[in-house]
Amino acid sequence: MTPDVTHYVFRPGHSDFTQTSEVSRLRKSNKEPVIRQTHPGPRGRMMAEQQKLPSRSENYPEWYNQVVLRAGLADYSPVRGCMVIRPYGYALWENIRDALDRRFKATGHVNAYFPLFIPMSFIEKEKEHVEGFAPELAVVTHGGGKKLEEPLVVRPTSETIIGHMYAKWIKSYRDLPVLINQWANVVRWELRTRLFLRTMEFLWQEGHTAHATAEEAEEEARRMLDVYEDFLHNEAAIPVVKGQKSEIEKFAGALRSYTVEAMMGNTWALQAGTSHNLGQNFAKAFNIRYLDRNNELQYVWTTSWGMSTRVVGAIVMVHGDDQGLRLPPRLAPIQVVIVPIWRKDVDKTPVLDTARQVEQRLREAGIRVHLDDREEHTPGYKFHEWELRGVPLRVEIGPRDVEQGQAVLARRDIPGREGKTAVSQESIVQDVRTMLDTIQQAMFDRAKRFMEENTHTVSSYEEFKDVLSTRGGFIRVFWAGTDEDEIRIKEETKATIRCYPFDHDGSEGTCFYTGKKTNRVAIFARAY
RNA sequence: CGGGGCGUAGCGCAGUCCGGUUAGCGCGCACGGUUCGGGUCCGUGAGGUCCCCGGUUCAAAUCCGGGCGCCCCGACCA
View 1: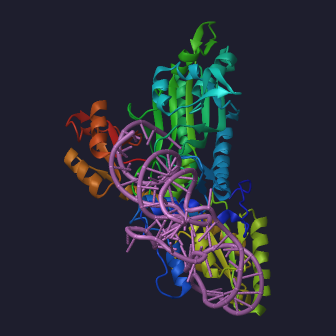
View 2: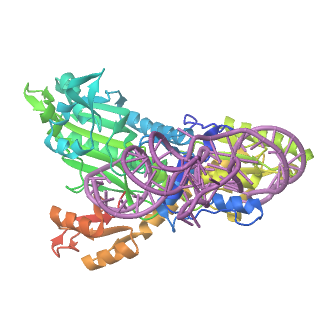
View 3: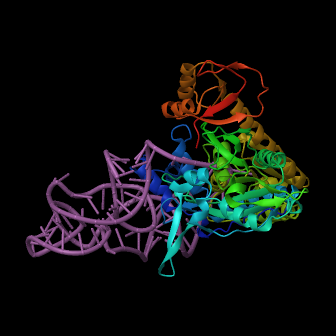
């Protein structure tokens, strides 16, 4: 629990947790049954029902939308396909950003910033690149009230403009390697959007490096993939399958693309991060050359790698349950919420005093804590609200606890009574710290088990289709098919090759589709 | 761009077929009280260009014509 991560301050009364227009908009359009009061009854129950999330099993996409909106992570913008990242969601992103940034710095990278606008002609310089991105470009044709001589594209990614600058900066082998990262927004004109997972504008980091040799570039691409894996495992508690993208799925303009694939709660795959060995494609397109030790001109070898706000969606879908969001302690904007409980007025002061003391001690210990001392809501209400928002640990302090010098810890990852333990106020700082670590680990273990349980092997296409439609998940198979085979499978089953996993031991088997002998293994899945 | 649906208070809806008091209900919001160990309860109150434009009519949320916007499903994708 590093103290330099963002602490989100929740302010009651601020409209940060009001019902958003989009919650209902989605309800409406999805024909969610709307619970209406048809008879006079206890309002508490009505409220409970009205505010209940759709369960994941009954409607996964709707569950996802509601969690994102109601947990206060994001809201829709007036522009179709865009979203507003709200303070709670942004605090989560800041923690993600910082955890990644630390790792980039530790591996020798520096940050810089390149412009949003890119000359149209730049995009056109690399053949595959332009083919890949042309359909999703936002193009600026007018500025200052006049038509531009050359249209500017809003960056969908920055290989081209960075390539242009690298050509200018790199002259000698002494200038290499160049290891630059940038934190930026990018725009891709998407037809179908989903909060965090696919919006027209999103935030990310894009690393761009240039090297003297092919080996070094390859090493860099693989190193950064390891960084992503490390981040996802240790910060986000998300297990992944590391591997190489197929020819069909690789980045437009790359020699090879690598990926970390995570399994969402509905067993679909999601690419959580990618790293590309760009070979000399961009070096040649932008003429990035240097003089080597022998005074000979050489093209550099470049890489690029990125992780985006999409990981927020991954966190929601990997860890969330029917009560809402569940955040891994290391990234949670609020790690601990204290809910004070009192019955009689005489209890209020001692309870609140104790709660404030505990709050202060936790904060001083570097734990991101929030005391929910709002008087307009009951403890039960607060329990539900903080569970929806995914706070990993709740501390309950009531009159009985004050009397006995204790507090009750309630784990978000274990619902109900089983997740509750009473601890002494004396040892609470250490107990909370230990508990947060335990939760972090438990969340990872749970997600890992889920991914393993939902990874299947098949030996025929019939079986493949059967498993995909009945059980879903990752399907791990020997694969000797062609690009055309891959496309056909996608058309027929919607499953794509997520990657050729690195963990395959190289043994030989029979391709489930072509029947040929091969030592290549592929993981197929439905993907976001 | 094809198929389906929707536009009435911040949100969810009723009312529209069959034109007619002051356009209603729930949630949320504000205020007061009450409650608080798993979504308290009671009272009071604020809040509306009924998507827009035009037409019919003594009278339009409601009927007619035109427009706009949004959502869902399908074709591209971090």
